[in-house]
Length: 401
Image (cartoon, rainbow, N blue to C red; front, side, top):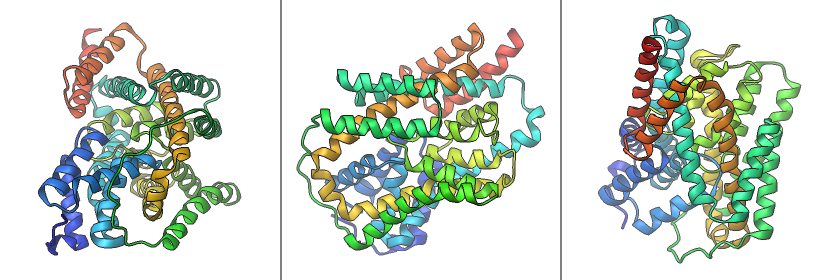
């Protein structure tokens, strides 16, 4: 069913197609996957419906931002390694550039921003994360065991909010899922046409695990902020199961306690990220530009952006040749089900600390957050519009109270 038109097999053509999508793809990862389906299955016929569903299943199975990984895989299947890079760049650059400009604007022109606007963005983050927790809990915690895993994960992280604690919670949840959960068998499907050998895939996966193990050691041995930033953001991009919102507690644990980014700036940027098209992982570009130590600005943003997305490239390219075997593994599915429940717990803990505690100080803050949540969940307004409205609402509250 693939389209034989050779003009869009050129990496530059792939970049332009994904650039357009990066400019209009509001609404989060599920919406992004809908945009991709319309563009590449229905309109351009790059691949069949069942092949696209199989690709989405793989990227949801892997840690990292699912929609960005699907884009990387589509670019790879269409135009090789350069196509993968072109697809990622096109889809990522619009929101990354806007967030960098927002970060630099806060640093240089914060006094020109109307009072209350930044606080309104932090309140919007409460509504966005609450919506994510609710939706993920309904889908990923359907039974007593997984609800219990979610609650225990949240309690542990609230008591010990460190990156190591998060890694341990994810690992233990995977073991519990492997031992106690029985997920349904995968449905029948048609395999993807993969041009990468298992040997090459194994090399990419080995590089992923090598960097995950070696970067923390290098960060301890070598002086300088840059290697520490690469380590922190690479690790965050490697351990995120369940979507872009889950990166919030991992990044907060890395950049706020260390003093790299203030908690107020962190939450204001997270709120602004909701109003941007494209992947939520571009929040890393805002953090890199907002660093209180060097490198920061444009250079810092590039370092953080490349570091957080690098695991996605390595995992997608490395896992594609092994997807058939992974898909049939009941044990892997069970472990992932346990991990997914714990991930909801991590996000629930983040909803309280730092999101809620930093934004909700007075009754009017709670009221604004409640209106934003209703607008997202029941009025079905786009997230960017809710964020803009929350910023205006925060400003109006400073005039009234």
